[in-house]
Length: 231
Length: 217
Image (cartoon, rainbow over all chains, first blue to last red):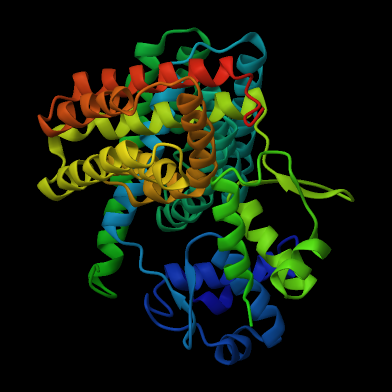
């Protein structure tokens, strides 16, 4: 990964661009986890106003990488193995429950269309689109639980997953080039769910989510070995 | 000066006591006068209660005490089934401390049920028992989610308890249901615990649906 200053700001909105840039900085280990994000130094570094920095940080806070601490301002949140473990177990449980529901034709249609968008995103090779389409597909699966509140719960979890998935994509050089097997995995999962083969669906989903978890775990361990110890 | 939290606390108590039954309108002006505070304070208190799911807020018409639609009842019971099955399934690997919490919550619930069946305290004790069952899953995210729906569940439980008192269902009957769950969990028998949880929820849901899903009537 090159110097963060070399990354051009060329996203839809300034706020999103700033948030992305700060996220890349965090992922490349600057500033370290647990260190405050100083508005003034970030503004100087990125050549933008403090106001834009503040809005970018606020956007980040809604997912994971930054968290607000009284008297310290925003602090880079340490991704811990424990936290990732809880997050993964929670999504695994919700998705496995959902995979055991036989979908109605309308639900099948929604899941297949989410899959089509996931497939289309992978050819775009844009990290943000891939991550968004991926989460939308998993949300369509969890919607099978047919519960407003559980769906809302998974939406909150998705926000946190968005951070980890983005980390995975940035860190893994081969991530975007090795999209085909992942799309194929999703295809098998969707086919099993919509075909009412719930035992296959559960097995495939478990494999998919476990694999994802282990990859993220590796990245966190690697990162923490050259930055800060795990909490 | 009275804070929005104070006002919310007092209103919550009155709602859970069923002194303000479901669908009772809550008017900012009248409440401000009653509590001797500003309308702004009342508005903030109502926002807090709304977030807990204790109110129904209709734009331009103001707030009223929450009335559950049949869909709400169905969804809340579905959530409970999913969460408590999850917790019950984990009883084999739960810590001694977690199981002690279940036992403690059960004992407290039994005492309150015997002495004060028709009270908010009983409904809260019931909800807390089920929170300790969910907590067996050992997931901070799950506990956080449970707490976000805990108050609306408590109100639903409260309405059921009122009905149990009306139809003269003795408290030891209610306690026996919970004891079955508690015993299976303490003996670390996940299958029996899951069954006990599902039976308990199914019988409550059936009664709630019979009540028309519109509590307080």
